[in-house]
Structure formats: structure tokens, C-alpha cells
Image (cartoon, rainbow, N blue to C red; front, side, top):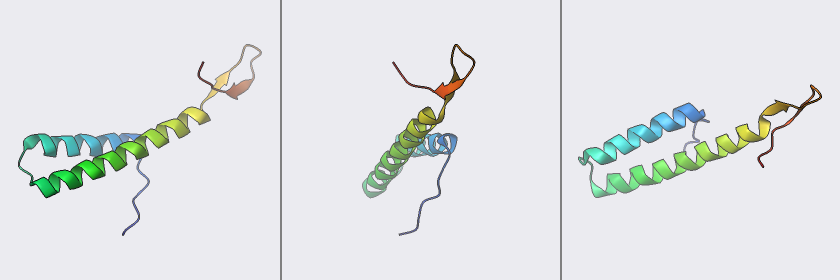
Length: 73
């Protein structure tokens, strides 16, 4: 199996929109629908991982003017 390109978050969302459009059009076979669904779920997991990775990398300026890692409350 070929290795997937490491898409940006925006590219993943664009691919997901394309998959959704194809499935909503209703002109794909059941087998194609399952393949699109699987591909969409994989892309969604990839996008979520990239979002989590980005959240961990975000830096915030603290009250003393220094940088610290952003953490959710």
C-alpha cells in the first residue's frame, strides 16, 4: 500500500468536503460508499491528530512577557 502524503489541516478538510459531496450526490456504488467512508474516517483522524499537535505547539505570552506552552483549562 502506498504511503499517504502528510496533508495539512486545510487539505484534510478539503478532502473531507470532497468525500462528503461524492457521498451526498448518491451516484456511487455501495462498495465505493464504504471506501469513501473509510477514507473519510482516516482523513478525519489525521486532521484531529494534526489539530492536537498544533495545539501543543502553540505558545502564549505570560503576564511576565515570557513564552509558555498554551494549555487548556
